[in-house]
Image (tube, rainbow, N blue to C red; front, side):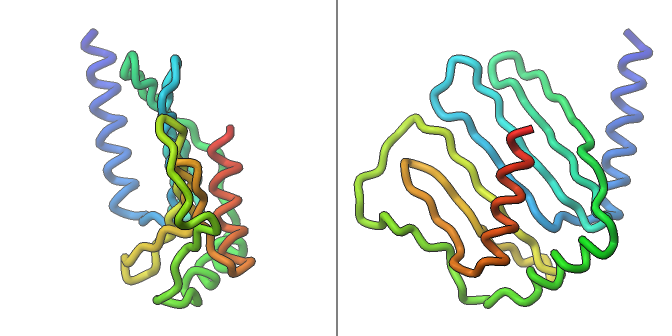
Length: 151
């Protein structure tokens, strides 16, 4: 029991240290809606290029973390340049605006973070509606976040 407590404490301290050094560049969140086996997922791509997927079973409370890999500095530079070049006034568009919403469905969102810590949601799917950027590069980032959530 003490060994596992120490392991959790050390893991928490290491995780906190990593969070201080690297900042999020992209996060993708999945909420299961009404589901007999609800699992919430959060993907984080941080400024070091590391991708981490956290999953939480909402019934048992079990939390698991999985390192998915590390992007190269060239790949990160492309992503950060794409994010930095985003129009600050641009918003994700829902082509079904004005149509009825639905409930109990899963929801997904992808958010990017600029160097100045401002954040922009570039993709959201909730209530039978989908909001997306029309810019191809930004849409591609949204799709990256979505595909990694499926792991």
